[in-house]
Image (cartoon, rainbow, N blue to C red; front, side, top):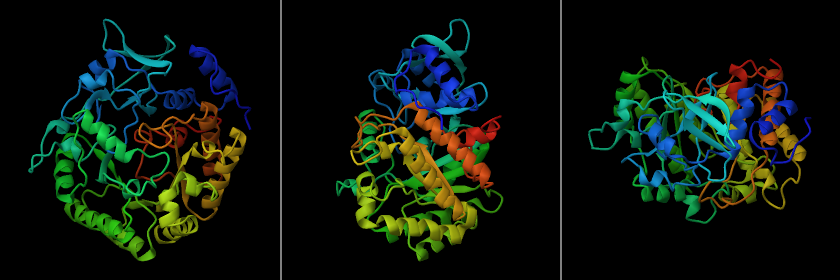
Length: 431
């Protein structure tokens, strides 16, 4: 295992050179993506200029930004005038989340429509943005702005729908420690963005028709907050999928990634039938270590339970085969006092998590964690970039050993909070 450097290394490009030396088999773009995700990007007026035409932050479910001081003065009805993602020269995409303490900033180069990422003022890489689709500004039959019904991360990519824009665990004060779905709604409203609390299939089909007429939609993502009544939650998802599949028809058979709470067998079968064989079902475990599950996901621990959640994931594997998956929020296991004190221990835990589910025929995944504004752990220290690179390297090697094929329902353009798709696309570790 690569030795771990301190979380705060040297300034500018020297820090990236340090990371490259520690991880010589990883692509340079993957290393940069991981570091930018950890550090965020500082706001500059140039971001508002780019936000006039690029795919913007619509705050569909989570608000990653720690600073809206500049963006607050420059918003549209449905979004903040700041780009939501940017790409590197090889197509590697990462989320653009604002953090005033970040060493990174994006600047417009004078005299040309080109954009440069800098670290501590030193040029790092040229970056690129996709233009905002025209359907974002159109309205549905009931007058809703279309970008409030769905969002995307680029052409030939995702069509993301938040079915439930609320989570009842917040009402019980038992929300997941990393989550900010409910505070994000208030923050969005402060910025002049009213989010839909629930999306109807009829409206989604209308927006999809407008979007697909403008650019190819490769896959769908359907998710939302959790209900205490999980049977009701399952019915909402099944009814939505049933109507969506009928409306789309066989001619539009794009895969779906459906992310829900852990459901009982009958409810899982209901989703399987409603999905017509097109869906990847994910019950996010959130935390692998059983002793940390009640700390990281207290509502899910009390109302469902760790063992019942793992059993539901394994049962989904039998019902959906390789189209079943789970995910955890990697890094949370290092936050509480009861958590891991070293990166090496945390990495070994992630390896145990992935090995367990791989040996059961499922595809375990993770998303990188950094503190989300409004979450219980908003001010908690984040893991070093080395941690994200270690677990990504381990994940790729385990995937290769188990001959894992990535789900068709996601791609490198929408997997902006992990490196799993990037390492496959770029040739992987050791290329």
